[in-house]
Length: 330
Image (cartoon, rainbow, N blue to C red; front, side, top):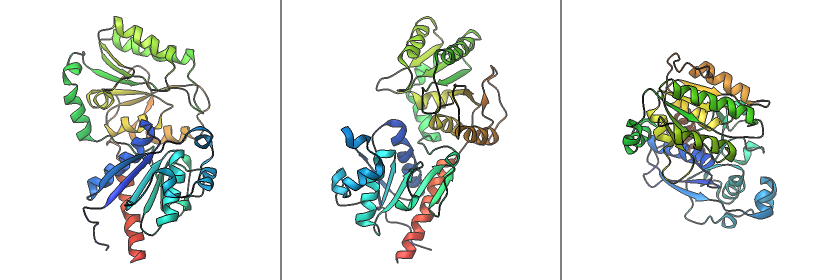
C-alpha cells in the first residue's frame, strides 16, 4: 500500500469564483483534507470577453500553458476544478506536469473524461468512463461542524423565530427549469401558509432568483415577524438556515441545494418548477429513494433517513485513484 502523503501535500481548487461552482470543488478538497493532511489553496480564473464565452476545447487550443491562467510553480500535487472555466487550466496542468499533478474535474466536462486523471460527476448526468466516479447530486461544503458553528454565530437571530423553523431555499430559472410568475405565486403561498400556521421561516433567495420574486419576499418580510429573509449581503446565514431548520424546502432547479439539504438528515421537500426536468428526474428519483425527498404538500414531517454523505464518498474515491496513480509511477 502506498505511504500516506506528507503534510506538505497541496491541493489547488480552481473555479470562476461563483459560490455554487467553487463550493463543489472546495467541498471535495476539504473532505479529502479530513481524511489525510492536505493544504488547500483557491485559484479564481478571470477569463473575459469572447475567450470566456468560448468552448473549453477552444480555450485550451488558444491557451495551453499553466501560465496562461496565472498558474506557476510550485505546482500542487492535486488540482480540483469545477465549472467550464476550470477545464482548460486543468488540461494545461496535466499537459505540463501530468506525472506530478493529479487533476480532478467535478461535473460532466462535456469532453473526453480522459483529459483528466479523475472526473467526479453527478449520477444523473449518466456519464461513464475508466476514470469517472459518480455520486448522488454534487459535492459540497456542508458538514455537522460547519452547521453547528453557523447556528452558534446566528443564534440570537434564530432564537427570535418561532418553532418549528423551516428553511426555504429559492433558486431561479435554468436551462431546464422555468421560474414563472405562477410558479412563484405557488411558492409564496406555501411560505405564507407556513407563517400562518405559526412556523418560523428562514428564507434565502439566490443570485438567479428574479428580482420581481425577491421583491415579493422583501415585502412579506416587512409584515411577517416570523420570517427571516436573506437576499444578499456579506453575512450569509445559509449554513445557519440548514443547521437550525426542522425541515427544508428547496426549489427543484438546484442540485447543490437539494444535495446539501439532505446532508442534514432532516426532512427535505421540493418546491416545484415548470419546464421539462430531463435528467433531473433521475436526481429526484434517487433523492426520494435515498432521503425521502418529495414535493412539498404542507406537512413538514417525513420518515427518517441517514444523512447524505456523498462528498465523503467522493473524497475516498479520489484518494484511492491518487494512490493507484502514485503506485503505478513508483
